[in-house]
Image (cartoon, helix red, strand yellow):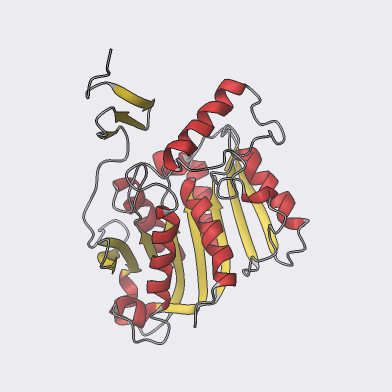
Length: 314
């Protein structure tokens, strides 16, 4: 019997469903909120198109106090998570987090929205993120199209960050900056929160159950249908022989959570980076008793507050 259009072809709860007729149903990360002045943090934000061809935007954040100042502030470029399939830079989850981080850190932040799989499979997310970073870098001499970046961003003091899939993107974009130089942008550091890396062989005490590991690979294959598998360098860059060789920044903070299945990849990243010949400083912060991206779901808990302060200090 032929399948009907309404039948589910791929079901990955609680993230996403794909139907036989190609319809996509996202189960999480579908809400959005507008930019503007946040009364809790006095942080201002606005959306700006960075790619006319695709219509993709960034959301830019500045502390309210900077509007009357000529002081240049460190610049953070942030990539949201969601297994490459869900969430956006405009979701309340990320909007609230960036407002809090900008307020605590006294920085300028650019939160990148990128095209998502499965409608736009990998490498669309990486391509968009690189296009966004090039657009940001075009403001280094104060003559770019966006005045907030011209006036307030210190391009000698740039950081990349992201959570989960966004942390994966941040790593690859950081590596690319060493291969394709961006004039006027000095990448100082990187903050990876609960990075979404994987691999065919377990590391540390990572789960060895074949069914669980197959589920992780299934999510990755949904995002990247042409992938070679769990050891694709995009999802497993850590075992690449050139790992760390092209990382230009000198500081890396990796945040993991005790109950997160991905925490072992974070520790493995730290270990491999230390032994790669890279001459920077890498540190891991582990939150006890917490799970994946807990700081986004429960931003008021003590571990989330501690994590925010640690990131702000970095």
